Image (cartoon, rainbow, N blue to C red):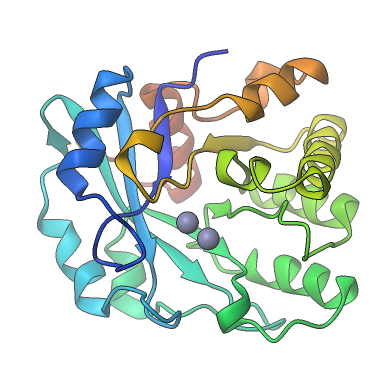
Length: 241
Ligand SMILES: [Zn+2]
Ligand SMILES: [Zn+2]
């Protein structure tokens, strides 16, 4: 299984990240990556980027050294109402939104709350991807969330970074992937790179998907044109590269 895009990468606009956008692009290109999304942390999390980063990223080129570039954000879900920390024009001018739960910006309760959180954030039409839902400290009703993601044409992320964390995360990610297979829910495979050598490097997620005989037609980001087609249909707009 070859994945030729990486839709979840971070840059040094956050101090806990160690590579520049150019380094991510160059390393990704060397891996054969056709499309990268820059998805830095939105402002509410400590060390998140300033709102101006997201507003100004629309001025970056759409193709850099032959690699297509989507300008996105990894927004923080702020509570079970599904509220997120970018709004208005900042959301409108970005190409791609990943919505994630991060403990510094989320008052953690129980699996029922996590389920409600995911269900509510999917009511936001700008949300394209649910970020790293497989983290082991945020259990939720997998059946309800994957069914709603299918209904809303939102992708569930299978995150390489999550799978290297613990056996508990591995098991939970596998359960999520099995539910996506069962319910026909779309997925994307991403690195969540915080250093350029991680961009476009996928080992554990493809291996897990092969083990469960996951249907390739549900993986939206196997190549650039497939993902762009998905995004154009979902957002009802044209992306020019
Ligand atoms: Zn995250
Ligand atoms: Zn991330």
